[in-house]
Image (cartoon, rainbow, N blue to C red; front, side):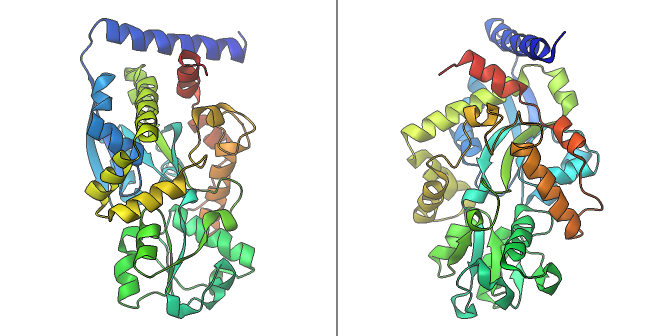
Length: 344
């Protein structure tokens, strides 16, 4: 049987599984969901609107300060589903089985180099002037900083980098412990609102679409146990996106409630991430898109390969991931099933 036929059969089975479960009034699928502290706005909105429950899911949420501590939960198999950034490449590097189901966000859209206005750093090209730079090890921030230095012609070894996650950069700036840092959203915009400007956003020094995918992933054994889980998660994401498009205030309120930022910072974050910067499901299905989940070497596969090479170069991981391992982890089946159900 051809790959196309096999994929078609898999999609048909997923659709039947989901519709069959709804028709029979099956008990909700219970699972543990891990997320780091970041701008997971569609997850937050889905929680607030009860969208998980609407499709027959019952998640129990666990929050982490960054993606790195989340790995322990995956390794111990106490987490079933996760939404995170490049920490998930560490999971693959540690041989933790994962399947990437869809892009939940593109954090590169609002991630950037934040500076102390007294530092004299006006853009990423001035990164060599920084005395001490905050960037969390093994995250998008570290990868972003490496690519920034590379484009600016500054040797990585010449930079004085301190392992500080984005939520803690504010205190470091205020105590003059650092004069620059790479922050993911909404902390990049929060710092800017408090007088620490974003000198450059990721799009200025990273490849098209950035190298900071926000992905929703699940353990393969959980997907096998619950064949309709993957498609249901896509359905929840789709409903949350639709609700946000109709009423952006939902996202603002969610950020204020969960991340402790002001309404102004919340709105600035959403504005920065709007307008085509969050990959649509069609983008993810398109093999030519920078966000593709169907391309074997480009799109998400290419971004994760580049990220793993950077993490290896910065000694965050022992060796870069093979392209084959990355390809095996990317599973577009569920977004393709959703698009088949909802052609536009």
